[in-house]
Image (cartoon, rainbow, N blue to C red; front, side):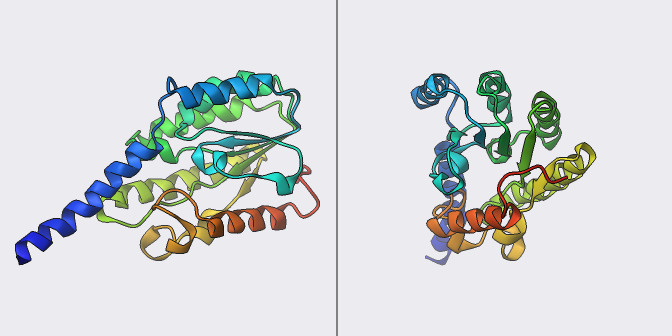
Length: 218
């Protein structure tokens, strides 16, 4: 019986991570992905764009005024790269970007994510204001230790690259992380996606960082 529970203790976390991977991964050919792309095409000019994956997609950012929510559940840095030309057609003044956790959950190499970010930042070079948000940690399990280490490394890269390019970098990570580099339980519903408390925290940080609105602040 003890052996059974020991095996179960190992299997359940592994199964959780597998289910999370299935949950967050939405291939570009998925109907939902295509529906979102069609929605974006129909929208006219958008001065403010929130860009990312499900963490962005599954929230209403109305507190920040008129905007385009260009988050797509399951998206990756590759997906964002493919969407940038269409988004630039909206002539945004400000783009708020968080992307990369799905790459890491899919075991993409950190170097590949960095390469994609170089291309993303270059593509948005003519946007008046590009705001880079840190990547958030996921639940703390043995199976996610490397993912959370990569999150830390990616955020270090994003912070350094933002400084070099004179972009605004916002550290959400420090407020969300708990013991052992995992996300604090009250801020997540499943170990990856955010709870209402998580979104309230995210909003409060943005409001504090941009109390006078999304104006250029180098």
